[in-house]
Length: 284
Ligand code: NAP
Ligand code: GCO
Image (cartoon, rainbow, N blue to C red; front, side, top):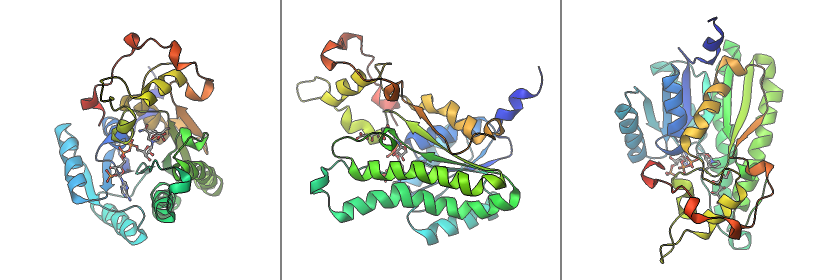
């Protein structure tokens, strides 16, 4: 065999995944570590960072983790300086940290709106801004943003989240436009409905033991008729961080079991006996 597969290796790279103590961020980091990268992560408080460090240790991954709020530019600049001194210059940034507030728009306060925009849109701006100068100097870099179905679609109660994730799609294109000449690629992963703590309220069983109505709704919208698993996203995350994707820039790639290609079916046609249940203990 030739050297082709080496293009997918992250050997020697430093990868910073924001908000990666659990959930999708943890899955990206595990995939990167297995592909040879050194892992750096932050989270919003020490308890979460400790939880993350424990998770990485359990998997034999020597990760660097520290508290850093992605909405605070001074904290982010300090985090990046510390990483440069202790681990090395950042080659790969995944803007994963995110929050959602499910509140009807006419009942949402400006403060709640701003919180979501701050974490989900301004956070990626602040973190990208902090790593781009070193990437320009080095002549290479990968930035991967966490887009969503809500980068394309709306739905009840998620106005701020949809506005932020739609904006993040355009920030992705703009980073590509501005920094492609420095061999920096900025792309986004657009997950469908993935089983993590963020989506757990949408799968909660009803008091009578039946499935949450949203669970049936999502299966009826998804040709695969199941929720995504964090492992479903690992291959794309590695590809977009690796030299194999060096000429892919400014794109959002959706991993959604087909949701965005499908008009959906009447939920009443589904046969729940064929549903594979989510093992919530793995939805972390
Ligand atoms: P998650 O389970 O809620 O994890 C997000 C992480 O970000 C948490 O550790 C969270 O801490 C942290 N965080 C929140 N605010 C932060 C801040 N200001 N600074 C630093 N860290 C912060 O989310 P997930 O489901 O893994 O999703 C990860 C990303 O993918 C998010 O951007 C999400 O919007 C996006 N996404 C998820 C899905 C899905 O179906 N799960 C689909 C599409 C897109 P706390 O625990 O304190 O909140
Ligand atoms: C919601 C969900 C979504 C997903 C995801 C879809 O309430 O509709 O939480 O927004 O988390 O972003 O891609």
